[in-house]
Length: 567
Ligand SMILES: Cc1cc2nc3c(=O)[nH]c(=O)nc-3n(C[C@H](O)[C@H](O)[C@H](O)COP(=O)(O)O)c2cc1C
Ligand code: SF4
Ligand code: FES
Image 1 (cartoon, rainbow, N blue to C red):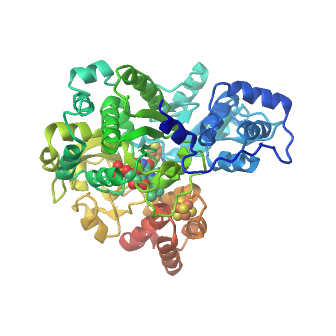
Image 2 (image 1 turned 135 degrees about the vertical axis):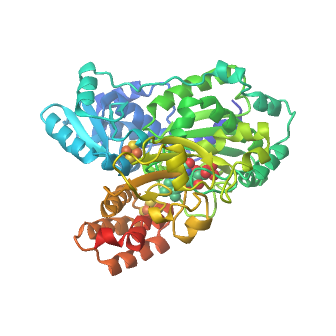
Image 3 (image 1 turned 180 degrees about the vertical axis):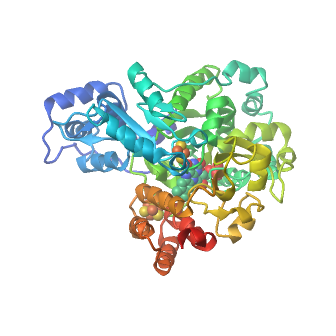
């Protein structure tokens, strides 16, 4: 590994080295705990950015984080104990407990976000809590697990159960098989047989130039599919213009409620995604690329690890090292600057912009951040041409994308459809119509943040900007949730605001306090419209990042479009 990368990985670039001797102020380190952690982290990096990875190792082994282990970790990593606590307590997948307490043998996480709630999650949660309260089984609620098409879902250990019922839970607990389940996917041999890695090989042997790739991407009109819709070709061009060394970070956090298309990409055709990633890294000359993967996808972690080793052996990663970093259960880490903080081993606090990641990202270096699906389409676009891609759009949209459709339709799932398709077309042509006994009443055009629209506005294009923008809504990551006459929009708005309240990182007051107050107001029998509107305005205008700025969208929309549900 060259020196430049080593420096970047240690996170020291651009900072002065301090030669101070480390002294653990005012803390007593338990000898046994120190031995435990020293042996667990033997041969593991103690660099500052590895804090979250090291916390995962402890949590995995002991099923919790004992206070004494955190003290030992802080000493071993030469960090202030307060900082270790600060990070460990930020992420919901870390359980800090007192030294004398025992962790639960098994943890069941029940998704209670929007689609799962519609499909009966609250009742499942209540029944399981009651049933297992005397056994050493902990039952907790959890946010969207990226499996909304098979709602309701839950996770036992690292194993997910789709369309869950109590019998299924009992069976898994009896078998004690809590490992992630891995489905069949297109492996390396098959991928190569079907022309995979040809484009990358052409790039690596200089048969194609970076500028040609950027040109094709610009022609394709591919826009970032993580939610913001920034033109991909332009982003790559801007990154290349920044001074080297440059880095790359893939956003595989997929936390937006209702979204599960990145999971689909990585678990069915991982090499298409990896080739896109390696092509991007080649174009921007990033020597290291971090893949920030949400912790809810342990099966993908295994797939990617296995497949990355194979392509390393084939010499396809010589120009760029791929490193997987595990998230730890924080929606906000999908916001790109919070993701960068998390990769650096810190709390996921979004950064003020500018500077943008392209200018100053990971460890202070220019960093290309792209979503999984954005990268998934790169190979096809370069192979078949920019026009091939942009020709797919309809109703003014350009290209195609994967919409995650869930809720009251006959066939929910990931639907590859033209950009600009309407929700009516999606329901009728891609989802087999509405579920029996359900009439189309309204929908989320873009997950929890993108607002709620009534069925009467079912003919507007699901695309960035345009008609959705005019209604104060957005398509974001393409998470479409369909509601029927059996769903109360009051309850939906409350569920979404509770999600934002839980997931607000707490850095700024309008969002931290605003989401909490909004939840309280929404629980009142009679909604105080004036107060809600005031609160919405403050949150939208004064929050630091997109979470707080968009959190009031569901409430605004219910006030605007679903008066009958609140009167
Ligand atoms: C609150 C919040 C959550 C986000 N979550 C994700 C996410 O889970 N995955 C993702 O790719 N982008 C997410 N984004 C968008 C990213 O900040 C960023 O725009 C994207 O990763 C850039 O990649 P792209 O240009 O390929 O879309 C989120 C944004 C906000 C404000
Ligand atoms: S808007 Fe919310 S999530 Fe974003 S920085 Fe402020 S508190 Fe954190
Ligand atoms: S998996 Fe439950 S709402 Fe997405």
